[in-house]
Image 1 (cartoon, rainbow, N blue to C red):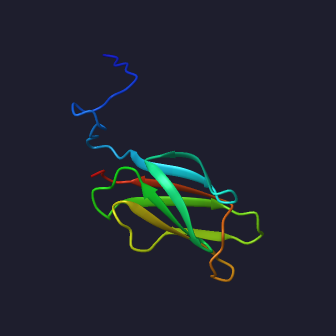
Image 2: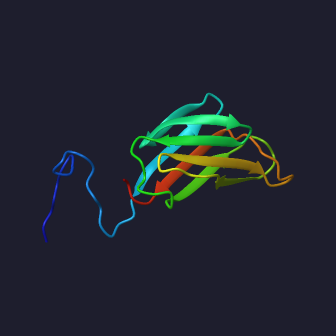
Length: 122
């Protein structure tokens, strides 16, 4: 058995390596929506507030097409439950998110929002 140890792996062109037969996260973020500060992220340049319960995450490096998968989660200080969905017309460079109150089906702001994107980078 061999052991490979490295601090950084990059392509011969200097960019990210291509992972074959693997599904690693291509972008993730955790955003404090009270202060609208990104607590941590990878491949997310900005997050914007588009109105009650609606947000947009913009990517540093685009996805190869709009058929990428997204997983979202949110925390809310209110007593009602919430449903998080990645919705709207995604582009290769942005992911639109929607948070709503499942008790009355209305849009609801979250306190914190997490996002993970998987798929292929352009």
